[in-house]
Image (cartoon, rainbow, N blue to C red; front, side):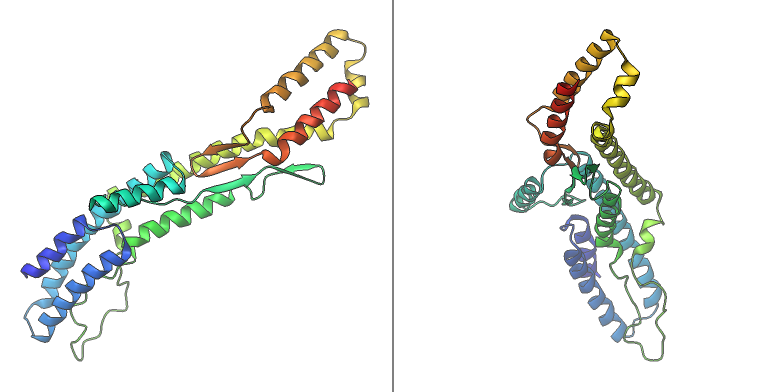
Length: 273
């Protein structure tokens, strides 16, 4: 039992990796199997209590993992920086309870295709990608197997139910709240990126405008013509900058392919007016 306690305590401080957790649990399962082969009495109840202790340790790591994922999204750095942070952590021999989530960046290019400004892939596409990454990180723990007390007992059927720790996601309010906070953070990032990309999509009007319509509306009002020229100049300056992309956490809106074309379109309209 002392050897098992050592392994259970190791779940608190080991690296946040499925292989590491599984190695520890496999070792505990081997000890349980030995007790089973030695026909220990009340083994099933004892294993249930042991599995409850393990569940408590894993729940704490699961909550820490989701908080780490949320922090990585909120304070996003490049994948290179994330890898460097991991190397430094490993070198120090210290593992954070929630690990170091490596969230991949998602680039959305603003392009002009057949005189139409679009953003492929759509910003919404990143929702499923980020959610899947979150679920995979949660699965680091939730996909681990629970202990079995009767693997080598002849004549006893093992339950066909779920033998993983998936129930940890719904068995504790802390896990539910931590997961909900991650989903909220994803939606906030998507909303910011979508709002920004919409600014670029609005420049479609430069291709849709008709000079004859403008002339009929402005007429011979010189003040309106002057205001129109100033507005064109003002809007042109807002996109005439050195940057070519805007970042919202792991979401990147890259407008390098349309920046020059839009500037040229503004120049064309300025000359015509």
